[in-house]
Amino acid sequence: KQEVTQIPAALSVPEGENLVLNCSFTDSAIYNLQWFRQDPGKGLTSLLLIQSSQREQTSGRLNASLDKSSGRSTLYIAASQPGDSATYLCAVYNNNDMRFGAGTRLTVKP
Amino acid sequence: KAGVTQTPRYLIKTRGQQVTLSCSPISGHRSVSWYQQTPGQGLQFLFEYFSETQRNKGNFPGRFSGRQFSNSRSEMNVSTLELGDSALYLCASSFVGTFQETQYFGPGTRLLVL
Image (cartoon, rainbow over all chains, first blue to last red; front, side, top):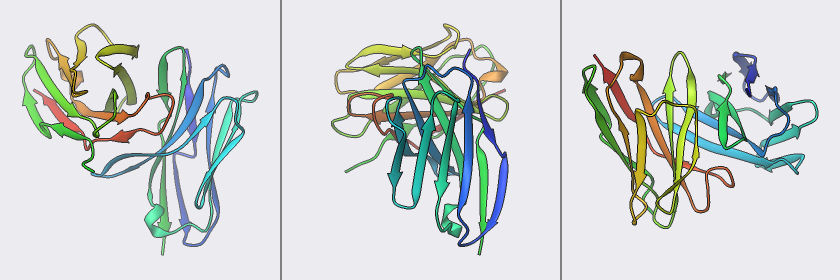
């Protein structure tokens, strides 16, 4: 059974800092991995999707990497801003199912 | 372009009742997926419908069912409600499929089972 873990559970950083969020999964036979952002009361937003054949995806200040062999993905956020404060979730898809991590709650302080 | 809409936004039911939630995808999207989010279990995938057919299914009991209509609108039904079904139910839509591309999420329906 696929298990997805996100570390740390919470992170607080000052504005402008570069940061890395981690996601690990137990079954490396994944089809793809996605990163999401959830804002309180505002729902879920897809950020990046990495197919199993890809190593990374970039969107603006966000860069997600995937290392299937080690069962890890990282989400790198450059020059963090207070507006980046949210919960970030990763999810992996395999065996016709999708498993989510518990998320990392990020606070960026002005 | 209108986003994903979900109705109702809030719902209170009692144990044993059944409930139907509705999701209208973004125009042109043929895939609709449903998710359950609870404080204890986090976010979990329920199922995906594409062109009126269930294409993927998560690990939920048969009390959870869904369907999709020819206009891609989808409904999710939960029968014989249990206290543990209290959750935020999210739906998401995309052009070709939940697991192939970016999904767009609705605001969710918050269900409380008493």
